[in-house]
Length: 167
Image (cartoon, rainbow, N blue to C red; front, side):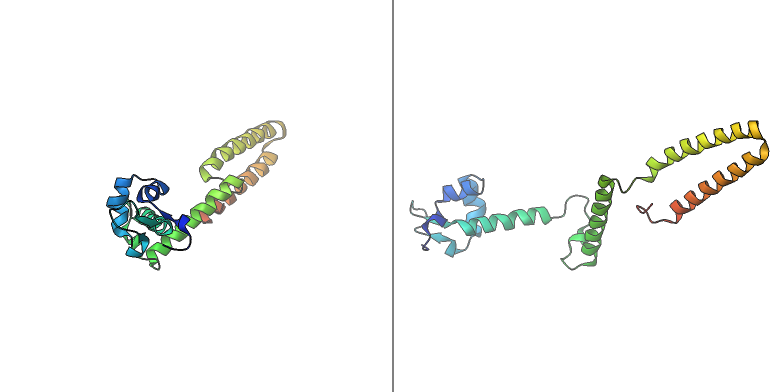
């Protein structure tokens, strides 16, 4: 046993440490640990397991479970740490995280949320133009209508020419 006896546990305590039953430890964890991870006689009460080895194996086991492709995942995304597909997935996730962050900060609004506001705004302006036309004639109303139409065209062009998430 190593100098630090506190790191050597019974199999029952080792199982408890990683949140599983002793039987599950014996069936799933114990066979995968190196011989150096044990001290004492196998099958005897004096058998001890090196806790850091147990924890390290359990972490590797959990990471493998998380990294395993789920149903519907593109298996190519998990091809290797340097694969172009994995890099595309990372970039996609980073871009979406950035967009979510900007939306949460109020710096980004979905186009679908802006359109109804524009409709109401320009509707109110058009109604005001009708009042101007009745009071002052066609010339002032035509000037305002042309300006409103120009602004609407510019907004539409900005939205169509922009990258998604940028306007």
